[in-house]
Image 1 (cartoon, rainbow, N blue to C red):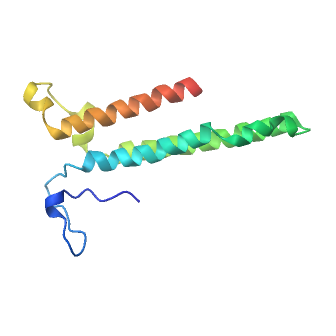
Image 2: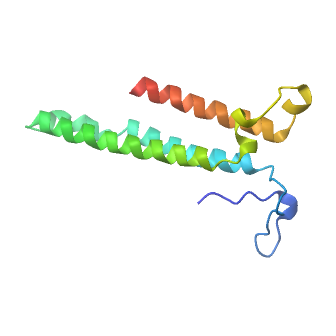
Length: 133
């Protein structure tokens, strides 16, 4: 479970504290990055599966290959669904496509920078998925 998006000044010694309503957290982009990294970790685990080494040991190679392909498809669709859920749960301020102007003042905005980072990580994930498809 990812940490809650609570800025340091609102943390408490006893308890966890809370982010004031209407005040976006500066660590929110970090929290969404952690969610993305969990998904990417599962992608790496799936793509480096050591069970693929034993394919030659099966007498019925075609049936084994079909089961393995179906399993990989189910895993891929599950990962894609988790990624889409993560992207759809992001607030507008962390979506690069939702940011308006590209002025110098706007580019120094912490949420704009976080949106750029999340967008780059998402695009890299899409590029990698296309390479392995």
